[in-house]
Image (cartoon, rainbow, N blue to C red; front, top):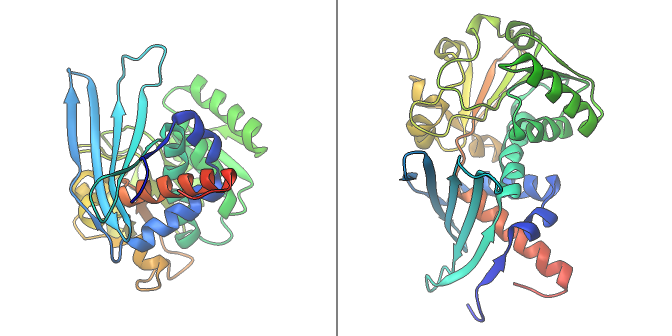
Length: 309
């Protein structure tokens, strides 16, 4: 490593990121799980309500950590932030610091898109999303890029929030969207995405119809849960990192070990085997996603400047 460490500010990374970059970086990360390493997530706290997590990993020439923070008391600043630190693999010295709060939403949604592309039926047209927050819109956009979605159903805790989010989906994507109750949305879904902070099941397992793909995006800490445990006995289970998923992800509530999505992408494991399969993907998020994202952002900036990082 030569020269000073690189720094990419939040405004720069937000301007550089897009769905194509995030999807390619996510695919690289999931394939790298076969040979790379990830380490147990460290959960920290500053004062009673401020929380942060550290996710670290290494793959090839990428070594580093992502620090994700949640400061709920912020008023004039975003409550969530994401900082990726890359180390030089030869020396351990600082290689780059990338602020990536906005890019992190693309990164998370890209994992969903990868899972849907690998596991959902090719003719999936109805997307139901449970959750009406900022991340949910990214999920809708990412999924609709890999499947011929022509209808979006929105399930929210509050009717006004669901109506407002449905209007936002249509304005952002051009797709018709409407608020519905949970039972209607789950039963009609070809693809069902949950993007919440729930700590208990959001719907009844009996509402899920044959052939549905489900992406559970919200569980990333002990005690979090979006899906009914009864669903797992009739579904094929997939995730990003099996051990992590069972420790802090959705499958901390499952009895059997899920299959790594990276193995499916590499052709080393089966994904959907029948149009009638119910497939479930749990995304708890892992460090290689952040490292490949940071490297891709740095490459894009370098290319735009006509130089190299």
